[in-house]
Amino acid sequence: MTTIRIEALTAAAFAPFGEVLAPRATADRLINAGRCERHHALATVERGGGEAILSIFRSAPVSLPHDCTLLERHPLGSQAFMPLGPDPWLSVVAPDLDGRPGTPRAFLVPAGTGVNLRAGTWHGVLTPLDRAADFLVVDREGTGTNLDEVTIPAVRITA
Image (spheres, rainbow, N blue to C red):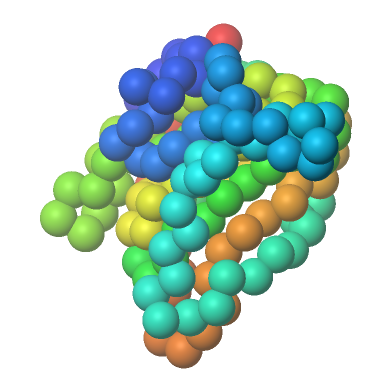
């Protein structure tokens, strides 16, 4: 069994898979009579001819160590996950190797931070730690096959 350690989430480390959704050090501009910072266009919604939709996903938790055995991807559109609760969570992603996932990587996503996965990015299912969590999800709805799932040999994720 392959074992991987959880990595700290940084924009640079996550760049091959998508964007980190968190405020920048400095807002792009102030709006609402100067009462609101706008951190503009943190990510792009890839729609592949479909519509961008908003959903709330509620996911059961996992504890560490966690064995990841299922990866999926959405070839026609991006998929963004923003937690609605106060807890950190894991984002498990993998590079594409000729249509199959490569070795997964696991990122610890801080509380209040989300990720936007590019179209075609292999990823694990939602992985909150220790207690169930709700996520606001932005993804694509439309015609065409936009879900590939594969079972992989277990990859153990540790702290």
